[in-house]
Image 1: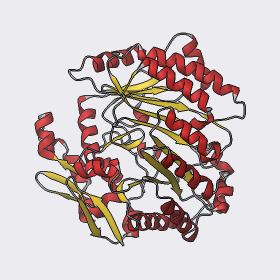
Image 2 (image 1 turned 180 degrees about the vertical axis):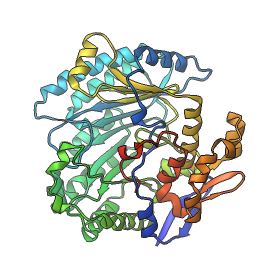
Image 3 (image 1 turned 90 degrees about the vertical axis):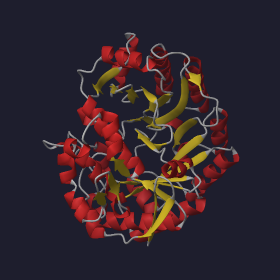
Length: 473
């Protein structure tokens, strides 16, 4: 089959067999590297004073970065059995009113910490179900954000919202565009009715198609669809039918995530019947099928679980070397200071990460006391910054330019990362990576295993740390 990969300056096509044995060999637990260090390294010794210091450092930079805001809206009307997100299942819509009031308090406290002339170029609403809020409530939220921050009015800004198709109408989609959102992400997961029933998330193809068409009519810049492979009752034939329907809808981007079944950690997953779970080899069959069907349909494999049409911003960024990565995955706007709002939200300001409390009662109590609800965080060391940049270069651009890092950090790369390069001996022997005197290069065969390659440069994976993560493929 034909897989499509991108180099820094051109699109490259390779006839490359999907080596199921090789993929299986490197399918072990490991981070997704939406951050480095990863969330298990966050700690409660990082306090509010540390966060305030980070904002002062950020404001004082010679060229302060643009701002990005992530808003976590935790509420859902019904429980999806596969979900591992931080959510609250409730039919009591008055909870949204209370939560919005506290969000506005947090927005005001955060805005006080950042210089007023800094542009907000990226906004993302996630959850939970952001469309649990009515459009009137979303308008109130957007108004509060506009009053607090200087919104970027150029065409390059990216204001996105995750949408549960079961909770909106085509008219609501048009209203979301009027509120200022220019990107939508629809959670589909699977169109097969038996699979949908097994995970308690039932929605029709026609429903999703109508919403995507409404988004196009409303002139959204980009529409994305999320899928999950490895769900209960999925077969190659059933998921092939789902892929065909998604391809026919033709979203700009498709994210195909591997389902991590961890019922010991996530109570909702215990509602899935064990006998309905596909065997491990099925996931590899589904992954192979997904890559084949999407690339044959003209989608470019960006990396990890992301695909995009050739003229999409992600594809163009991958081609010209400007692709980045943050807590929302691959992005063209990741080089921002990220402000996390809402329960459990994570931020990245200067060389620090911070995370809010995860419990709603604590979130309200902190704000009632006039305090930001920051619970824990992490201040990066010089080594952390170096390793973060190395890992992101690999995952976004497919290579590590040793000379660049030697000049930038004043190191001898092969000496500094001697242990890391030794760990990649197996990857080199298996044709996943090449290492010469100047560059570590991820080969087409290694694209699916890039997380395992990145793990060689991670300084925190000892002492059983790997078991904290999902499998890498």
